[in-house]
Length: 407
Image 1: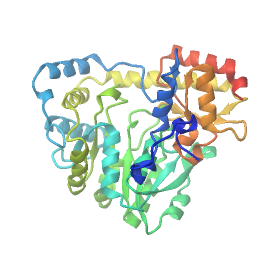
Image 2: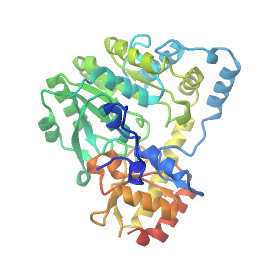
Image 3: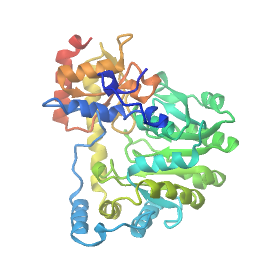
Image 4: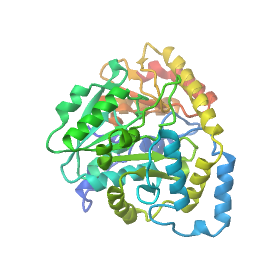
């Protein structure tokens, strides 16, 4: 079945002259749904993961001053401005008590997405197997396929709070397995992996000489005062794992900087040296103005981030209450992190793409079809709760009025 919302509404894509590797991937349905929504008026998006909050003023001021100066008009060093890389290293030590050399072991990227893409292109060869925890972030699927890799899906069990079962991981590993991709907290389910799960992933990677690639975009965003175990800490706890550990992060969500497109990746110098070649081939460097803004974000006051966590926890609770009122139509697992919930459509046999498209047409509310996140996601939808509370309430008001019509 197609993973494309645009194909679902009849869009045809040229094939003649286009490489098979590009024909084999789709634009993330998250973005496709936003493109389709742009044709409607008065749309409320529970689709793309964009916080309603503006970038803090001191970060915007730094960006404006950078534009007015001369540095932002020029390239930075390929791996990023040295002051930013030093600030990242200091932050990682302060936050996770890990040591990464800012000159040799950190590379600034065009968002966390580019860091992940560089890592996959660096490690994964044609027909190498990459294990992903499914439902998985939609773009990870396309990045692996673009590199020629084969996706091996490790099921997250809804009845277990969207946690994996480690015995499944051991069964999936073969001689062709090259990498385990760990997105934690999980997009789209909001799962925060238990420490014992991470321990077993690390153990399996060591035993089989596998790379671990992490996407910890939401490492700051966990609820109910739960603790978060970052995989980067295994670089110190299991030093022998460090050579195959690649950890990626973003400034997009914690500082409301999605449009700035800046993130970073940490790995041993021998790995960063190769990632840098891919980075150079595609982008040269991250936007300098965004790098300056990111440095200011790390070095400045962090009250915004703390407030953001509390506000998003309130929004999570609001969305869960609204879903409770729709328990005839949906069930859900309360998310522990990130700002997504992944409700199950209780009516059997409903195609998640058809549901999301019909919902958009009837209510002008955007959600993302569950199948965008892998076959295990079918029969679900992803709802982001980054919007203003008034918009969240209005979205559910609209859904409640039309839900019977949709079914």
